[in-house]
Image (cartoon, rainbow, N blue to C red):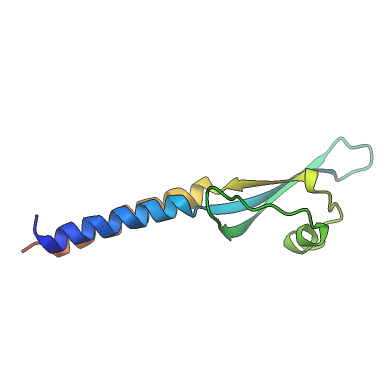
Length: 109
């Protein structure tokens, strides 16, 4: 392995760690009766960007939820939950690995 390949592996490792430190997050709406009587519940989720893993996004502002969910009538923060978007995180990690391997192959002598 030459120096350029080592640099590519190092850059890929740094990118992999950075993606893990700033994962994509989603806001999930869990609850809220759709029909009177409360037997049917609505669930939905929206991507909210990348945030530091040690400081997950939080909001107590009802207007934030109404804007995020296109005028949701329930603005109580208890109905909302922030989660890491595991599917997008996996795609990002796979992309970093594939790009790093391709770069190492391209940089061989």
